[in-house]
Amino acid sequence: MKKQLEQLSAMEYEMLKKCMAWHIRPHQKVFLEGLFTISTSLRFDNLKVLELGATARSTVSPFLVARGANSTVTCYSKSELSKLSKNLSLLAYQYGLVRERLHTERADIFELDQKDRFDLVVLKDVLGGVNRQHDPDKFRKAVGNCLSILNPNGALLIIDKARSLKVIHWILKKLGSAGRNEWYYFTFNELKQMIPRGSFETVFVSHGVLSFGDFGGGILQKIADFFDEHCVERIVPLEKRVVFSLVVKRK
Ligand SMILES: C[S@@+](CC[C@H](N)C(=O)[O-])C[C@H]1O[C@@H](n2cnc3c(N)ncnc32)[C@H](O)[C@@H]1O
Image 1: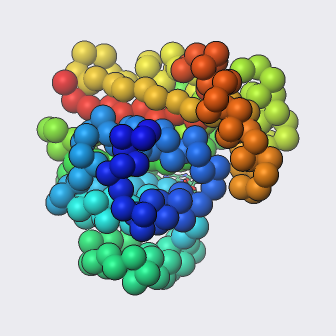
Image 2 (image 1 turned 60 degrees about the vertical axis):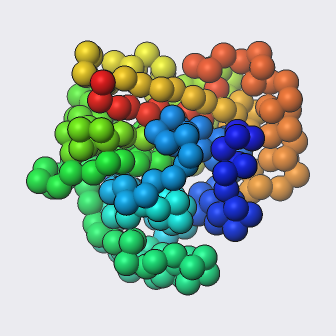
Image 3 (image 1 turned 180 degrees about the vertical axis):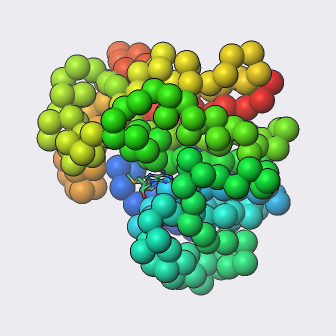
């Protein structure tokens, strides 16, 4: 991640942390490493982005706009829209972003406007929650909808929590609020199977094992992050870490 961070100004880095809002280190790493596979300079000049399932508290679009993109930032719930819009205005003001590059609207992943096309579609911590009955066809449909609105050189960036080691999966399911609310944790193979064969290439990265949830960013989180970075991630394979990003690009 050193390479990626070197390309950011201190202000962009601070904004990134603020926009991502929670469970910072693994999410930040998979996000930047995923983006790096799309543009090694981390520049996204005039790229047309669609972010689905954003909230006022957490949206990655301001960061992408700071790096040159135009983004349509969408939320699923109507009641979130005005909060989201206000927060984007605040972030734009604080970090000197062109507000007009951040357009807000409501969107449902199952009812995307099929006439519009994007260079990058972002799903950050959205996919595992779009069907609480865990119907594989619904998940495949959600991913297929995102792929169908990509421009020919476009990419889909999915960030979510995967099915990790048994003990961590158990904790997330039994004690985590998302897990108890039937969030779905994909295995690496399930993710691969959701992508239509032949026409797309994928890049999978993952981080976080002990740092598997939002511990409030305090000392506990720092300890978990430290051990993950310096030893645990070295022994736990990619497919068994908690937070992943999957970049899907047309071949
Ligand atoms: C765990 S929150 C994540 C929010 C934000 N992206 C983040 O990273 O913190 C899941 C989000 O997915 C949204 N969502 C649920 N169903 C959706 C759907 N069918 N289409 C688009 N977004 C959906 C929810 O409204 C919620 O904002």
